[in-house]
Length: 483
Image (cartoon, rainbow, N blue to C red; front, side, top):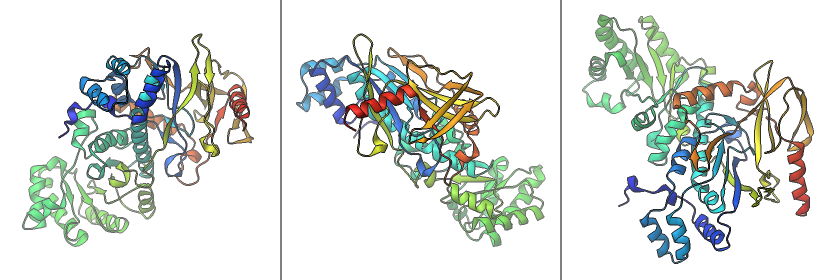
C-alpha cells in the first residue's frame, strides 16, 4: 500500500524527462543553461481570459526537489542509467531562476505565465509538476471566476469535493476556486490547510432520519440557532418544506430574537420555487431569511435563473466547477525558448509546426501590461526581448500578432511588468502572499478588464503584441528554417 505522506514529488515527472536528462548528462549538456516558458494557447469555455493559479504549490515543490535512496534504487532497477548519472541525481537540487505571473492575475494565450532559467536537466525535470499545478488550479480559478461573475455579487460556495478527481483535486480545487472569487467551500481540509472557510448545514439524510420533516427541522434549529439553514426539498418544497421551516423559525428563533436564518433548495425549478418561497417567507415576516440553491449549477444556469427573476442569495456550485466540466483541460504547455552560451549570450529557439497556433514565441522575454492612465483599464499586453525597455511616456502602435493588419494606438498609459522573480540561484526571493490577499488581488485585476473582454459569449479579443525586435527574431527564425 502506498503511503501518500512519503511520496517524493520529484518522481512525479514524465519518464522522458529522466531519459532526456540522462542524454543531456551523457553529452555534457547538464550545465547548459536553458530557458523554458509555460503558457497556454486557448482560454477555457471560449472566454476572454484565464486566471493564473498554482504558484504556491510550485514553490514548495521546487524547495523540496531531491532524489532519495528509494528513488535512486528504483531508477537503478530500470537498467537505463549509468552509475555516474545516478550519483549526479543523488546530489540533485534546483539552482536556477524562476519568474512567474502572481497568482490571481488575468492572463491571455501565448504569454508566459512562468519562465524557468536553469541547467538543462533541472529545467527539463520540473516540466510535469509545473504544468499539472498551473493547469489544474488555473482551470478551476478561471471557472470559479466565471461562476462568481454570473452571480452578480451574490455569495458563491464551492461544493464539489465528492465529485473531484481525487483528493488533491478537491483540496487544491477549493483553494483555486477561492482565488477565483468563491466565498468558501464545503471541503473541511481546505479550511484547515489553506484557510478557505468551510461551511455546511444538512443533507437530505438528516431530514429522513426523523419521523417527520418538522421534527428534523426543529432539532437542527435548536442545536444551531445561529446557523439555521434548512434543506426544504426532501419531500415537497412549497407544501411542506417552506411551511415547516417557517413554523420552526417562529417557534425557536423568534423567542430568541434571531432573525438570521436560511433555507436551501437542491432540486426543482429554481426560478419558480425561489420566487414562491421568497413570497411565503416575506409574508410570514422572515424577510432576512436567505435562500440558497445547489444542484449542478454553472455560470450559464445561474445567469439564466437570475434573468428569470429567481430570488436567490447564495449559490452552492459543485461538480461543474470542481471538474470544470464544460471544458476540463486548461491546455498549458512548457516549451524551450532559448539557450545560453558560456559567455552569457542568449540564443533564441523556436518550435515550428504546420499548425500555426503551435508555433512558439522564441527567446527570453519580458511581459508588460499597459494600463490607461485615464481609466485604469488594461489596454494590451506586450511581449519583448529581455534586454528591451518600454517607454510609457509617449504613444505606441501595437499589432495583433495573429493578424498584422490589425493595429491599435496606445497612449497615456503606464506599463507594468507582469512576471516577478520567484527563485534566484535556487533560493526563494518571493514573499508568498496570503490566500485572502491573492483573492482580493484577483478581483481587483479582473476589474481592470473591459466588460467586452469579460463577457461569456464572443468576448472581445485582448491584444497581446510582440515588440518589433521580437517579431523580427521570430520571423527570422521561421525564414531560416524554411517557413
